[in-house]
Length: 138
Picture 1 (cartoon, one colour):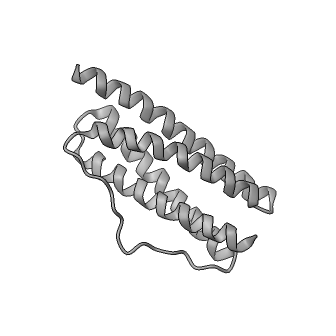
Picture 2: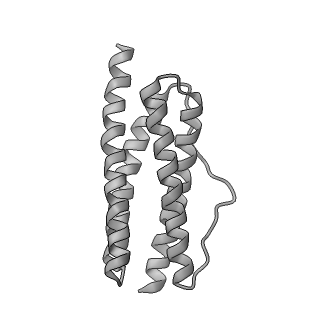
């Protein structure tokens, strides 16, 4: 079971890096204050998630698998990135639920519960930002 958990933790670590760099890239490009602020906040939280995952991996005797590169999709318009990010946040919630089910201690599950709540909030806020961005284009 610990090999499976390590595999899931490393897979999610890669997802957190991708989300972190996606949010950083679009926050730097974005001019809308609400969108820019949310993306910066999400960048910070995704970075915290990556550190948390690395700590779990080290505690389990594993080695975090750091990506050689972090491929992010770059678009001229933020809308495609928002659509993709909404889906990826939902995917992150599902992965964290799977990781939580494999955790052995209440303390670890509690940390994952906080992370799940943050990812759900990202999903919710990104959905509302997507609605806002679409309405401003109409």
